[in-house]
Image (cartoon, rainbow, N blue to C red):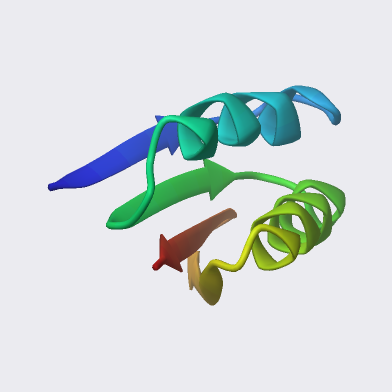
Length: 70
């Protein structure tokens, strides 16, 4: 089952904290994280990769979609 976090418009560290709370409850699967800044993209990507998740990045207008898979 795919989960989604909408962290658009939030400043760091909030997108990272939201992602961490969700990943801590998931051992595998897919998580989509929507962010609106490059800093949030970089920080969420760094967190996910450090926890062993693969990260794919896509742009959707002004938003950034991070798809985390494990």
